[in-house]
Amino acid sequence: AIPAQAPAAASSPGAAFDAKYMELRGTGLSTQPSPAQVMARLDELARLRPAGDSVRDLRYRAIYCDWAFDENPGAQLAWADDGLARSRAAHDGEGEANFHYCRAAALETTGAQDQILPEYEAGIAAARRIGDDRLLADGLSLRGGLHSLLGDQARAIPDLVAAQHLYRRGGFKADAEALLLDIAISYRRMGDNAKARDYLQQNEIYASALGDYDQLVANLLQQGYLAEDEDRIDDALALYRRTMVLARERGNDYDIASVQLAMAWPWILRKDYARALALVDAARAGFDALGDRTNDDMLALRRGQAHAGLGRHVLSLSEYALAATALERSDNRRYLALLHRARARSEQALGRDAQAFADLERYIDIRESITSAERSQQAQMLRYQFDNDRELLENERVAREQGLRDRQLQALLQARRWQWTAIALACVLLLLLGALVVRQLVRMRRLHEIATTDPLTGVANRRSIEHLGAKAIAGARAAGQPLCALILDLDHFKSVNDTHGHPCGDKVLARMAHACRDALRHFDLLGRTGGEEFLVLLPDTRMDQAWPIARRLCATVAAIDFDDLAHGLRITVSIGMAELRSADASLHDLVARADAALYQAKGNGRNRIEVGDA
Ligand SMILES: Nc1nc2c(ncn2[C@@H]2O[C@H](COP(=O)(O)OP(=O)(O)OP(=O)(O)O)[C@@H](O)[C@H]2O)c(=O)[nH]1
Image (cartoon, rainbow, N blue to C red):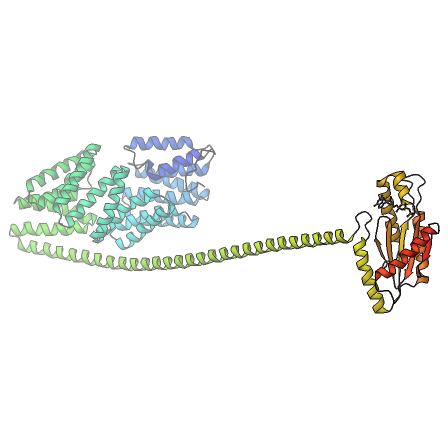
């Protein structure tokens, strides 16, 4: 199907057609100055049809149906029937609606009034079926126009207003604005002059801005009729003069004749009957030249009124007789009423009182029926407006409530977003804090390790082993358990340094400390107390139990392989042992005895164990 709006770029083969179609459906044809130019635009559209595109062909055929058969309703009807059959075969609702509307236009020209409404109804139904607002608006505006013409303004105005609303909503400004004129005419026909004036003024602004000649001429004539209805004779004349200038500029003979005819009435009201008669005669000549008979009734009525003004009542009556036949046929009751009143005056002037009386009676009857029809239509309209206003109020209320709900929801969502942001920030903060705490703990542990560990060997340093030793002694005392202390000292370590270098000595120390730690039990304590001197504390251990441990340590050290550092390098240790005594005041006393034993071991030849008992 054709998109509602013309595509921006002519990207697909149909895009150029669509753009042109939308243009012509808008004001593209109504603003063409001549039928030949209308046909030229239609030819352009025909050339843009993509080959084999049956839907776009139907669009072209529909617009052609509306515009190409000005003088030939028979051919138009046949064309519309053909289009309708094609649309049905293609299940194309848009085509169906279009061709129903076109059929109605043809029937209007042939004067088959009673068949028009069903065509509009069928078109409207098709448009509703496919949910096409613009087509629906087309149908409603056409049906509204017909109701208006038939005098049923209470039906006409809701249709026209609904159509205008749909056009506006769909962005079809030209169609919406053009409807202002139809709505104004409906209000004028219903006798609501204030509304009619309002709509006419709005439409005049639009039609002048657009330079839509037909619309502007129709508008100015309507404003003139309205001024007459309201006895604003000067205004009416001024409006007709403006219209005449436009019609002369355009060279539109039909419009010139129409304005001449319109101008006759204000001059009759001003009692310038000769001028009025001259205008009517000029108008009649104009219509005659065009072969137009549709204005014969009004021409005769105005001629009759002008003659009456000039005192030529017999002539008047013969004109009135002509007018009466035409007006009865067209059932134009407003003018029929005027005719009876005017005729009554001429008959009275000629002394035919009975006929004058009959005409006056008829005048009063028609006026009354017009007034009561206007009143009932206005009442219906008020009802319609009431319903409409109520619906509008209801819609506004719903929209307001919806707006409030939307705003509340937005606020809630915003609050949620803030909540989540706050939670996320708190999490980040907690994570940062956690990381800081962990870093601090690690740092503290490292500092503690640095403070308590000998960096070269990885075992407890002097300060730490002394602290642990004091605690172990306190523990042993509290539990009544034994405890032994061992002092290990590497033999001839100076010569290792001297022979293999200080770095080699460092490695020997480290390897030896590791080996000793591995040889001890998990609750034994080991620390480096000096250069090549280590202190071992054996909790819950008697001297007889300490012996095998000391021997194991000696053996372990002696068994360490240092070949990778220096070929054939072997190390031995001397150990001094002591057991805790109740008389020991502190670790110092215990260590002093072990130290003395070590001294003994060194003195006794090294690589041996001695027990301190002094
Ligand atoms: N490589 C290294 N050598 C150290 C370290 N601390 C002390 N020493 C050395 O250890 C040696 C100790 O020598 P001495 O006290 O004479 O004792 P020794 O040579 O082991 O002889 P005895 O203990 O009598 O068997 C000295 O040469 C110190 O320089 C250390 O951390 N690394």
